[in-house]
Image 1 (cartoon, one colour):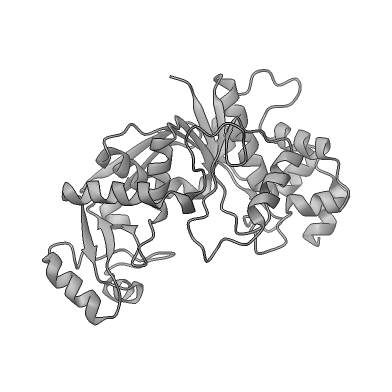
Image 2 (spheres, rainbow, N blue to C red):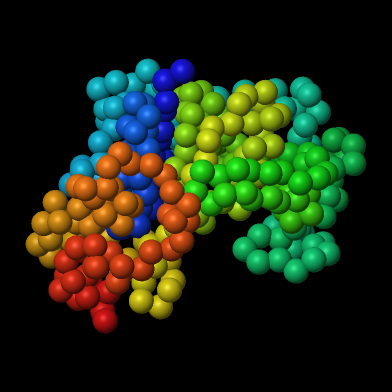
Length: 321
C-alpha cells in the first residue's frame, strides 16, 4: 500500500507559523515512507470560511516550501473534490449507512438544552445526557418541528475505553461515553459535523497517516469509533506539539499569531523561516532521515524557534514583545 499523508487546513484566516510547521511535518513524514502528500481544504463551516483565504493559504504554504502531490489546486486530483463543501453527498451517504445499521439517532436538543441537562461540569462542549437516545424517532421529529428546527443526528457511543497508540504522543485513552457522550455527526442545519466529515474524507482519500496538532488529540477517539462503525481501518496518528507565544498560549488566527503573510511582508527570507521550522522538527541538514519522535509532543515556543533561526527582529516586532 502506498503511504498517504495529508494536510487539511480550515480557511478561516491567514496561515500562521504553527500550522506551517505542522504542514512541513506532515510532508516530511509522508516522504520519509516514500508516500504522497495530499492537500484537502476543510471549508465545511461556511461561517468560519473567509473569502480569498484558500488561495492565500496555498500561496503561504508554497512560500515556506510545503509541497503536495495531489489535492486542491494540484494537477493530480484522483479523489476529487478536495473541498469539503463539495463533498456533502459522501457525508450524507455515510450517515444513511449508519442509520440503516441503527448506529445513530435523531436529537431535538439545542445546545442550551444539552448544557442545562448536563450532569457533570463541562468546558468547551457539554457532555450530552443521552436524552433522545431511547426515544421514538417520531417523537423526536415532532419535538424538533414544534421548536421550529430540524433534528441533529448523534452517534451511539459504546461504553468502554477507546485507546490510541499515537506515533508522537504515545498511548492515549478516553472513555468517550463518559467524557463526551453521544456526539453529533450531522448538525441540525443538515451539515456534516467535523468528526464525520474528516473520517469520511480520510477513508475515501485512502489516507494512511495523519500528522496534525496536539489540540486535536482529544477528538481522535471519537473518530476511531467512526472508523470502526464505517468498517474501515484507521490511519496512523501523530499529534505534534503546538507553537506557543511568550505567555505559553497557542498561536491563534484571530490574534497577531505570526502569520506567514506577516513574515513575508516584513521581509523575512523564506529559506531562513523554512530552515528554522525544519530544525525545530529535528530535520536539519545534518539530522539524517526524518522520523517522528515523541519529543515532538511537547509545545515549542517562539523563543525556541528563534533559537532555530527564525528572524528575531521580525518575530519580536510582530509579537509585540
